[in-house]
Image (tube, rainbow, N blue to C red; front, side, top):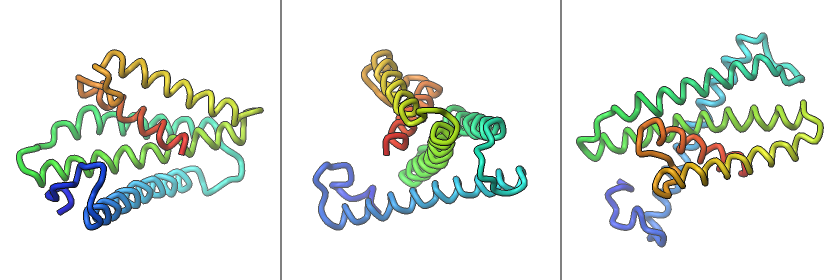
Length: 172
């Protein structure tokens, strides 16, 4: 219903449209967080429960596996979904958003824990990494027609989308 409203993409929305958008974003956030928590439960089940120390090798493997899975979904699977009707477009947007949301929670959570728990002066290194992400986004936009979300290829768009969400969640 939100997408059919005339002011759904406007900067200044009416109160009903603003509330619908807020509910929509809250549900997408909840679904993404739920997937992230499901991934955490799987990780703890495989690793034998929660530990107080950050297990670097195991977390690196987990983060890489989730990164690869998300990359395949965003670059090769979700772009091939149909967009024949408005419902198809909404479905594609929803699964893409939930996928990248869950991945961004995973990535930023693991990066923050690594720098905070294992690296001397880790917070400074973390923020340096965020600056590197922003510079990478600027370079991407330079070669993608000023589009910070990448493109024109599906792989470029997936990289740009993942990078923008990593920056967004990383500085949030």
